[in-house]
Image (cartoon, rainbow, N blue to C red):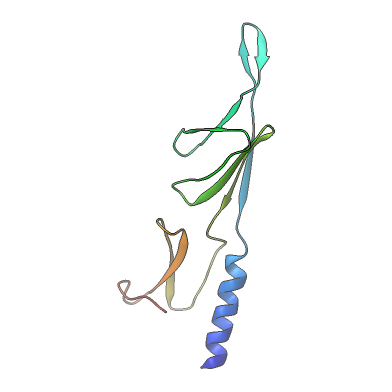
Length: 110
């Protein structure tokens, strides 16, 4: 039983270390016939504006950074997780995985 628990913990640790990131470059707008680069980043999730050099967390569990070259957003909860007999659900408040039994989703696995 200890070995199974240790292997499960190791699997979770490895899975949570594999997140994902996206990067979007700034696009110039044309004003009065001249290209103008943005002076801030726009959060694609909620449309909020963020100055260069700032970092914030989005409502969909992403950590974003705004720079002069663009906006990078990375997941805060890691990659895909598979625990036999359990369903992984990302908690939107903590941005962490929670595991529930497949045969009774009201009961946590751990």
